[in-house]
Amino acid sequence: MSETRKLAAIRVADIVGYSRLTGADEELTLARLRTLRSDLIDPTIAIHNGRVIKRTGDGAFVEFRSVVEAVRCAMEVRSGLAERNAGLPADKRIEARVGIHLGDVVEEADGDLMGDGVNVAARLEGICEPGCVCLSAAAYEQVRDKLHVTFVDLGEKSLKNIERPVRAYMLRAAEDGAAGRQAATAASRLRLSALQWAAIAVAFLAVLIAAGWFGPRVFAPSAPPPPPVASVQERLTSEPRLSIVVLPFANLSGDPEQDYFADGLSDDLTTDLSNLPDSFVIAHTTALTYKGKAVDAKEIGRELGVRYAVEGSVRRVGETITVNAQLISTETGAHVWADRFEGERSKLGEWQVEAVARIANALGVQLVQAESLRAMRERPTNPDAVDLTMRGWTTLIKSISPGNVNEAIGYFDQALGLDPDLPQALIGKAQARIINLYAFQIGDWNEVLRDAEQAADRVLASQPNKSALYTKAQVLSGRGQYEATLANLDAVIAIDRNFANAYAEKSHTLVMLGRVEEAIKPVEQALRLDPRSPVRNVWEWYMCDAYAHLAEW
Image (cartoon, rainbow, N blue to C red; front, side, top):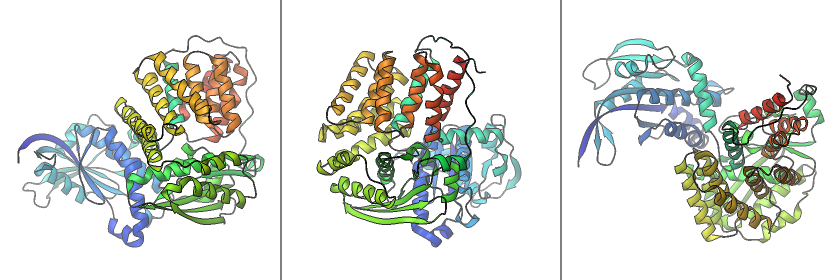
């Protein structure tokens, strides 16, 4: 077998007390670890150009091109773990030890790395304190003047099976400083999950704004400042009786590849509950910020201003799917309703509608779009096409790059090959191509907008679809047709008055039309519906822009 030598930055990490955690609750621990990998660890490694050499059950050996990137990755993952551990008792927390070394390694033909460069990193991880990062002197010299953090000199350490002592440096949990906070912010922006395409579209419109693509604007006269935001208790009192958040469903399938299915189910449930009369439903993007965390229903009620929370789990074995769901009062913490659903994957539409109907009945309300839900039951959906479509959405928002966007388009094309009329795949492909066009200038402007419009019209010809209307609004905005853009956004809100992205884009569109006085309330509503949106900063920019036009400094 051929081999080559090279210099590499190696990061070795594992979970502290993994055996104890699995011994106490193996199923829950494995589910949490899979979620952490898909939601935090793997995306953070990817963004810092890391390559996983091997996994060790509760840990991994990762190669980086740069020691700085390896340390930044470790800091961001640690900050993400700290966020998820907040409020948990010490024996339930997931913490990691990390060892990082810069050294000579041997690369095998299959890509595996061997040699002292790998061994030293592994031994440093072994002497590291929980929640900390331990560096060799060789690695420390590469980062000491590049990262604004403080390392503790541990002196010379004798490491098992390493011939010479190694000088070690420790980055403790309390030493992150400003760099750590920036890392946590960057990591949180990466943690997007399935079917958040609308939020991404808003972000790319912001790119166009920053580039001045929308053209000049006219300042309007001054207007009185908005009233102060109501307190949480006032919001609970004034909001509709059916104010609710659907928390991310846990994937208990034993397969991290099925995370997209659990995310897609909670997203669909959020959408369906938005159709209940007099409902106020927190957006899926904000709900996803609680993924993988132990949450307290009362605290969620206070944070989001809702009276109910839905939580549950999904287990998929072969062609059988089992879903456990619970409805919880955030005012008392009591379980209002719980049920279990089991069905065949090929009949997904049937039992999903049944689940939504049971939740609605438990709340004492009726579905206002019974015909739409009945249509889902009566029209068999190709499960393979649905799976491919979910994978397309997951890939699209996993990491925004031309490669990922094109990979998502490939999934959507495969789904459309199986079901040419699948609305989610038609809109998914249109959205992906718009992202390529707006963010990376890939594609012909007129052709992409024309094809996206045709896809939206094709979906709208068979059903009133908010996603298709939103896509059409993006097309019209790209052409500078703001009156028509506004009409389509109003139509989206008429279908789903909990669609936060539509309110945000309505605010921006009103500014473009010179109707600035009307622009404040829609973006405030967007922020109310989806307070933890990954593009909250864009929406706040919309609000600042509107106040600037009103000269409300």
